[in-house]
Amino acid sequence: MNIFRRISIKLSVLYYSKIINKKFKFFGRNVIMVNPLRVDGPGYIALKDNVQVNYKTWLAAQPLTGMPDCLLEIGEGTVIGNFNHIYATHRVIIGKKVLTADKVYISDNLHGYEQVDIPIMDQPIKQNKTVEIGDGTWLGEHVAVMGSKIGKNCVIAANAVVTKDIPDYCVAAGIPAVIIKRYHTGKKAWLRTRKDGTFLED
View (cartoon, rainbow, N blue to C red):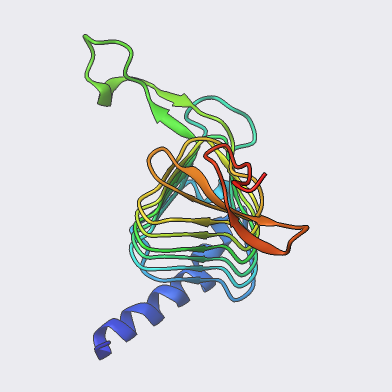
């Protein structure tokens, strides 16, 4: 890393922690923001203690669908990778000690497309389901999470598109994402599963 980038990172961290932090709904201790691409609606964004948001990430929380209590919350100790795009129009809750790789997309909303005589970019945003990502979960590169809940200590493989809920202690992969492995609490081991999450051995 050259000296100019190091200086740029330090200035960005100081700018957000000392000047812009008061615009956020909550801005915890030791939060590090490294040259974000954009931050839209900081008054609806809560960053808990020791959160790190890395290079060129876009955080947005805006009540564009008319839902009350819009909130984007990132839990304590979570690390958001480079070039992530996280957008809440109602509620996106990311737990503690979550790790996202680069170029991850997380959203609780969709573009409308139903009116074929109107360009999609001119159609209204549609509200999808609440997004929740459980404590200790890891999202691989290029993962997309849309209107879904992911449990604790899950692994979501690179390039997966999550459109349905994933319970605790699962490995999921694919488009759309399906469970391929799950922790068996009785056997205390990670075992292969069918697509519905039931163990192959059962």
